Image 1 (cartoon, helix red, strand yellow):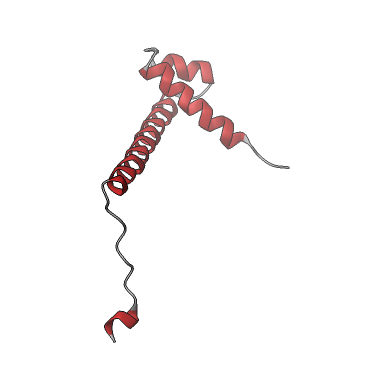
Image 2: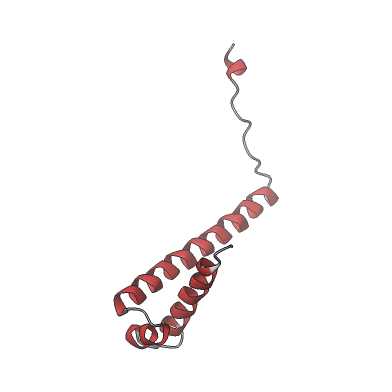
Length: 85
């Protein structure tokens, strides 16, 4: 049997992030709602914050790569040991 609890947990962490950062609920009230400790709630919100920052940076990198390609920059040729013979 597959355990999909990690998928549910991921969504709960993001919901906690939104409740805290966008809707201004306290960590204690969200923790009580989700039946976890306030300390664990603080960790969830921190993890969600990091994940959101990483995803935004990844999107920025993809956009910048496309912009550089449009400006005519291309990836450099990979070095091959035979280049030095």
